[in-house]
Structures are given as structure tokens and as C-alpha cells.
Image (cartoon, rainbow, N blue to C red; front, side, top):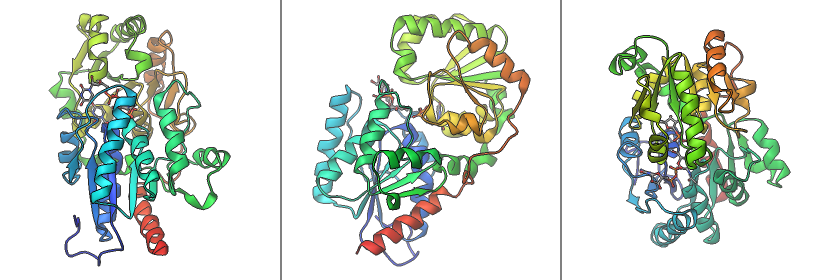
Length: 371
Ligand code: UD1
Ligand code: UDP
């Protein structure tokens, strides 16, 4: 599929993007656009890891992503099932449409599965968001990140410390490129669509409010942990209204743990990107365990309290407004962060809205040099 009719002449070979889950869509949009602007032939494969309209289709519409050429329809399952089904589907895809390069995003199961399937077929690989490390192998994403980075030829880095992680893991210096952050590109490109006043009015939030997002297995899978988390959120809600666009993963456990029992906690379905970022933009603080939200709040300078013992995005703490907190610390930490107000310091290097263009330029030069 040619994405830029009438653009520059076609390049040697095509690039296939593998997208599977919500954060992939937000990261891929600026890269696909920048490659299209350079006249690159592209194909989009959706693995189907996320499939609800609110977890998938709405992002394609709002972010102007091209409709996937194919959807593997893998759906939900255990880690092994999901990973294996993506691998089998992609092996079939590559036998019919072998790309000059496969572009991968982030750290979800679809990402590592695609890396494994492609590497065994000698398909060259690029990884956007390479080198992030939490050093916590209880997170499935940490395993996905390490394996993916071992297999990739081009490593696109969003944050300087990732270069050191990749070097220590033996990755060659000429494979690594500090390019900035495509998730921030998407934020910058859509900034004028984020209407905080309209978003607050839509949910009848007439004073300061907190937005919470929670979906990590370590927070939402075990009933006893979920119960403590709900208690901590109710403590926050005693001071400030809380709105939670709830990921499907946590819905049953958090509901059974009593999440809906406070009238000041507004639980809603997952939101489209524009609606979500509009709410975040106007929030007094964010409570999250998301990776992407830690970065978005850094750019928007909204205080962010991350309910995790570690983060693969430490730059959001040193050059942003993020803090790691325990459930017990949450309520006082939210109040202190709200009182302290927006972060006013330096932002991470190259988080300027142009990462997609850098990735596109480096990728096309690499492909041209390779023919
Ligand atoms: C996945 C990623 C995680 C990422 C998150 C972003 C892995 C290992 N995890 O977690 O890194 O932060 O996406 O949102 O890849 N479900 C639905 N509808 C959907 C998708 C999922 O109801 O459209 C439910 C199903 O019950 C499913 C559960 O959510 O079993 C978990 O989905 P899954 O894709 O396995 O992992 P996430 O928790 O979404
Ligand atoms: N997001 C959204 N609506 C929501 C929650 C999240 O549009 O209700 C966006 C937001 O930009 C976030 C991205 O989806 O950064 C990925 O979020 P998620 O927390 O699912 O994934 P993670 O970054 O933790 O892997």
C-alpha cells in the first residue's frame, strides 16, 4: 500500500508496522506519517491483541492511522498463547508480504512475538522505544523489551539513559539512535484539540479533580492488592473528585473490591485519545501505573503519582513531574503534589514533536545504504 500518492518516488522495498495494543497506536502514528511523507511504501499489520472499539478502532480514527492491511485477530489469552498466535500469524504474513524492514513499538506481547517471528526469517527489524529498563523481571514488559532489543538492527531511543542500557547488553553503538519520543509527537500534534474545560463539563467536574488509570497486573489482578488500592483511591476521593477511565483488565477485580462505592469516584469506560488527554490536561493530578501517561504528564507538567515500585522511564522523575508512590503514600502524596502545582523545570532532550521525522530519515537512509 502506498501511503503518499503523488509523493516522492518509491523506495527500495516496503516497511511493515506491527501494532497490537493501545500504546502502540499512539507511538506509531507520527512514524507512519513521516515515512509516508518520504514516499515510503508501508503496510500495517494489527495483531488484534486489543480489539474493543475503545481500545483500538477509536485510535485509528482519532490519530489518522491508516486502516490495517490485515488483522491477525489473536485476541486475549495467556502470555504463551498470545505470543505464539502472533508469531504464527506473522510467519504467514511474511511468506506473502516479506518487508524490507519491520517496525516495532514499545513492550507489549505483540512486539516481542513479532521480533521473534521476523528474526528467524531474516527480516530486518527496528524498535521504537528501545533500551527502556525497569530492571524488574516480574513485569512481563521487561522481558519483552530485553528480547526485542537483542533482535533489532535499528534501535530508536527516547531517553538518553537507554543508550547505556543497550550498550551494556552488547548492542552495537551504530544501531542506536536517540531520536526523541513519538508518543510526545502525537501529544504535540494534537495539543490544540485537548479541551480541558469541555472535558470537565462533560463529566460534571466543577472543581479540581484527579484522573486515575490502572491496569498493571501487579495492581489489579490480586483481590487483596485491589482492595488496598481501592481504599487508597477512596482516601484521595475524600479530598478531590476522581475520574477513572478503567482499562478492561481491572474492571472486574476493582469493582468487586468496592471501587464504585464512593460517590466521588467516577468510573467510566476507556476513553478515546482526545477525550482522555483533554481530561489529563485539566487535572490537578494524575494517579497511574501506565508507562505512556508518565511521559504525557511530564510534557503537560501535570503532577503524576505512579503506583509502582520502579519505572522504566526515570527521566519522567528527573526531568518531569512524576513520583513513585505506594498505596499507603498515595493520598498524602496527591495532596502535596496538588499543593506544589505544575512542574516548571527542564523537559527531556528532543521531546519536541519531531521524533517521527528523525526515525523516518534514519530508517530510509539505512534501507538505501543496505541495497
Ligand atoms: C497490555 C500490555 C501492557 C500495556 C497494556 C496497554 C502485554 C503483556 N501487556 O496489557 O504492557 O501496558 O496492554 O493497555 O502485552 N481486554 C478486553 N478488551 C480488549 C483488550 C483486552 O476486554 O480490547 C481484556 C481481556 O480480558 C484480556 C485483558 O484485558 O484478557 C488483558 O489484555 P492483554 O492484551 O493480555 O493485556 P493488557 O493488560 O491489556
Ligand atoms: N489512553 C487513552 N485513553 C485512556 C487511557 C489511555 O487514550 O482511557 C492513551 C494514553 O495516551 C496512554 C496510552 O493510551 O499514554 C497508552 O496507555 P496504556 O496505559 O494503556 O499503556 P502503557 O503506556 O502503560 O503501556
